[in-house]
Image 1 (cartoon, helix red, strand yellow):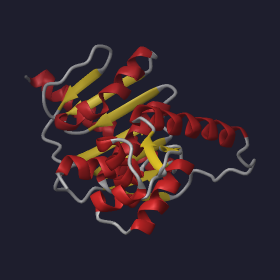
Image 2 (cartoon, helix red, strand yellow):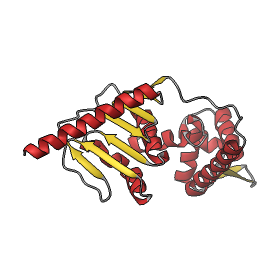
Image 3 (cartoon, one colour):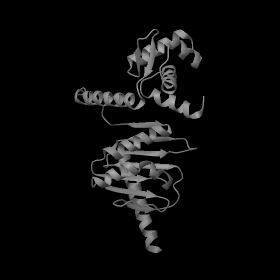
Image 4 (cartoon, one colour):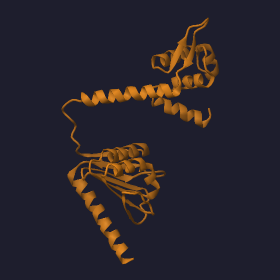
Length: 237
């Protein structure tokens, strides 16, 4: 299977399909209306598994059953299927938000976040949910990954400060340029939440996240001292 098709299948897993169902759905998208026998022949899976996957696709809203001389299946177009899933998940999220149990988990302790994607998601969430101010420290190579969140902060007139290691600018963002940061990344949001550690390709991709006051103050002081040092060095120049 070509790399693009493998990635296509991987992404379909995020929309509630199993790997086998995703492969069958992709086959329907590629070749249109087919019977379970034809799907089994094209994909190399057993006929019983092919019919099982097709039935699941119908149940999950990814395919329609067409009653002809032989039962055939046609795909729900990708944009419609994905759109339905996203809309349903949004509705479910809103319901859960409105009906969340009263007792909430306190944001205490120190949490280890591992994996490049998990760290990226946490940073994006911190940037997106900041109420007043954000400080982001990372190498310039990573800044573009968070451009949308930074632009939203600026548009909402929230104080946004970036400490990075190469010339970079965005209107409304206060930027300090310092020595190379390698793969270190750090974010402090509203003086309440901090994430700090290694992020990016060829790194350990391990960060520490916390809302502990002592940890937040320690990180905040370190950033303040770094900014003071940058200003002193700029004054000397």
